[in-house]
Length: 355
Image 1 (tube, helix red, strand yellow):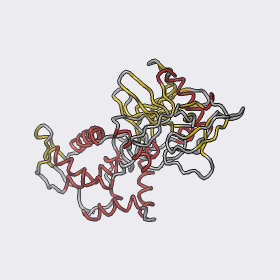
Image 2 (tube, helix red, strand yellow):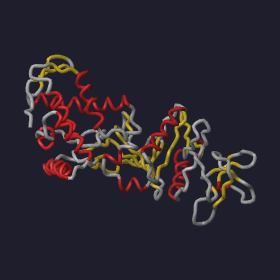
Image 3 (spheres, helix red, strand yellow):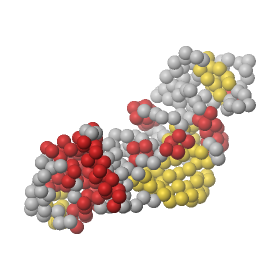
């Protein structure tokens, strides 16, 4: 912790603390130890054996350093370090005061469980606060796939799906925006360095492109997954079995338009195929409308790995899913499975054959 309270309940920064004074944790109110030296960032630590429900200790030097650096980055006159929010018993790393209100900043350097992440977001929601999650070096070095992105990715009209990273080595904020994912879950994005005051500097465009190799690789993964009874493939196969189809027989056109928004934990090609199965079962010359389409999606949703989108509201998910559905409906029309008969209404003109 960079801050603690003294016997007069004043918040004291560790760098300015007096070793002769007693200090206490604002959350659990137990005595804390001042640690300050040439090799470590000045901070307070709980005594051995302490069980504080609020503190996220042990904190790494990267975490402590990053909080100091970000306080300077956002403007020390607008930042409150480690404020204790008594109502929800949480202590964000920073709270930044902006024109539109207060913004909690969570600097996440180590692994966090989905349950804890969801719980912390829910706490802020109780106070009508929207937290900003900034990721540390461990995430920066290993963030390559949709499953790693999902817990922290956020959407904005300006940046699309994005992540924020704090680089302690250079004391800079980095933005990965317009994040997309391919058939195999690999992510692509644009990188910028945020300079503050609305200024930014382009670094690179990490694009992802469709290849025949990706399609073959996914088909091979499905075969191997079924052979070794991998749970995520078995649940999709069980769905296909119940509708007299096989997961291995995904039509080639399900792999068209392989780059999509990062809301699917499994490949979008599998989702498309299973949705096509449900559409096909309506029968030729039957009509399909937008409401029915979303009802079909709800049937598939228990199998969709979307639960880790901790920073994505249900409304945002549906908006982004709509983009995927619009593209898929157009593909089905191009391949003769659907024919438009009105606004958000189509006729089934072709069916896939049972396995």
